[in-house]
Image 1 (cartoon, helix red, strand yellow):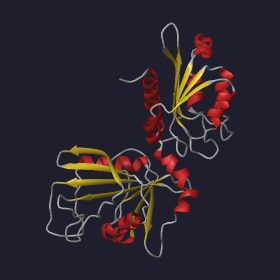
Image 2: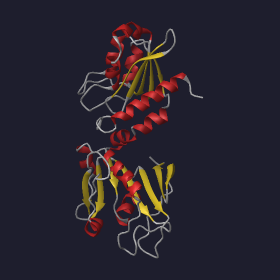
Image 3: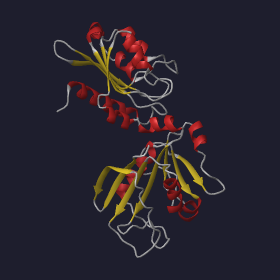
Length: 310
C-alpha cells in the first residue's frame, strides 16, 4: 500500500511526462502542492512544459488560487527532481520555494547536473524547510535516465534496436526482411519521435535506403546519422550539440561495435514468430543486462533490456 508521500509523488511523475517532447534538453519534472487542513488536498500543480520557460515548481505556484495563497506556509511541495539552486534561463526554484514559505518539501531524486547535485536541497534546509529525499526514487530516476546519462558520461543515452525472426536472424539470406507488424512499426516510429537522433551503418543505408522518419506517428523526425570506418561516430560532438538520446538501428556489425565497447544503455529487441532458413544472425546479448519490459503484440514481442554495469 502506498504512503501519502508516494501517492503525491506518483502524481508528480504523471505530470512530468507531459513535458516529454518539449522540455528537452532539460529534464522532465512534475510538482504538486498539498495543503494539510482541514483534510489534505492539492492546491497547486505543474510541470516543466518547455525548455527556457518556467520550471515545474514555478508553474505549480502559479496555479494556486488567490484564496489558497494563505495555505502555502502550512503546505508540502512534492517535486520529482531536486529544485534547482542556480541561475540559468530561469531563476533558482529553491529561492522561490523559500520566498513562498513552504513548510516541507518532498523530493523524488537528487539532480546529478553539475550545477545542482544536492545544492538545492541544502539551500532549502538552510532556510529551515524540512526536506524528505528519495520518495519513489527509482521511478523518478528512471523517468530522466536520458538526462542523467547525458550529464554523467557526456554522451547520448544509447538505444540499440533490432528486429529478429523466431530463429534469430535479422534478414533473409542477406536480403531485407519485413519482421515488424504494422502495429509494432507504429511503436517504433513513436520511439523515433521521442529520441533525438537515429543511426545506421553505411551498408544498411546503401542496401535498404531506410527513411528513418516518424511517418507512422506524430512528432519531429530524429536527426539522421550514417557511420562507417571513414566516418566514425563522435560522441563528444553529439554531446556538444545537445543530442541526449540516440537510437542505433544498424546491421549486425554496427550493433556489435557498440556492444563490444559497452556503449549502450538500453536494448530493444522485437521478435516475430516467422522463421527463415538462413541469413545474418542477430547480435548476442551481453551478460550485463536486466530485462525491464516484455510486451506481446499478436505474433510479435518486444523485450527491453537495461545495462547493469553503468
